[in-house]
Length: 488
View 1 (cartoon, rainbow, N blue to C red):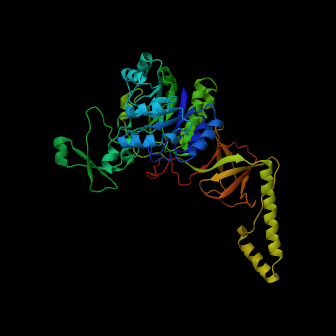
View 2: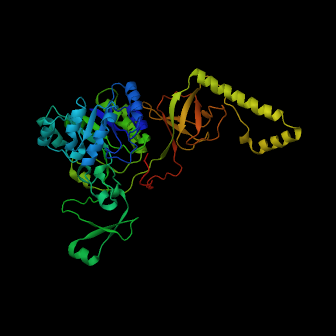
């Protein structure tokens, strides 16, 4: 089965490919159901082209899955030449009105039907095949038995199904709640995830006894009441559990699924990397490339990314999908930094020379001072040793790596290094150092926006993620990270 991963921006696309996705799906500004994701615009197509050259066998899917109004189609046509700059292998669409436009201007690009189209029967699959679709991303309400029936009825159609990530309580994500509460239409890409908010259930006892009427009050909107209607055969109201099918990939394959999909274009690079890696290893084990025992440690790492309680959704029993949850589980880690590349020998030499030069210049300034001024300076340095620059020195077998710091860390921290093929390599304090590449001086700490190189004996490939334990993490306690923060 093909593994399809989310990519909300160019960095996430890189990590999706690097950590094992066969294909990744992106969105373009204004035409994606994840408007709040960074998406792709301006000249980023140049970076995408270079990335595809690096990974020539990886595919790129573009989600154009909004509900198109007339002005949306007009705007899309105005941007046709720009869209043609991207090396897109297929478009994911739900609105049939955009199909003729795509077929005219992108005759060699495949059409994939979005899950938003709610396709869950073989008759609909045949109809979409007749108008040129090559793949159907089935509605999430399809069971494994129904998928098998569809595949048997239309064997030449590729079937893609979601295997992991957040689910929507609305039918295949066709939600009106966000538009109702906030005026932001989920079907136009502006979902405010109102189903995840905190509500109080308020009811008039007499009316409740007479009619079963219930109302919701959202915590940040006191005094605004919204009715809740429950059916006889379901109890799901708002926030659904997360889908997790990694333990059931054999059943998905037997059902005729050609591609499995990970949800999460608004999630972090940490989430994209670890979830993609886990499913890559699970699929490799399914195909006999590695053993299931070798894959298991990577699968267990799914617990180290933020997630809600999990469910198998509608695949086995719709009752599993009807069970709701609250909030999200915390990750015990903070994504601290990423490794770009290992420095060349010349670049390493330049850093060491800069360190020598910095120390020499410091000593020269000190030597040139008047004796009384020097005495005062030396006393200040004694009281504030951090003011004295200490250059990094070369050590046999150690290497320098370019680092992008995302959060604050220091030499006292234990670093955990995540790579596509290594579950976790631990760097204890003392086994690594960090320095400013411009001056070669050792750093006591670094944070986002600071230039830094990491010095260690450990081999770290490009794309390595560095995490540290979150000191505020409390097992079993759910902390609200905020509605607009990407979860680890």
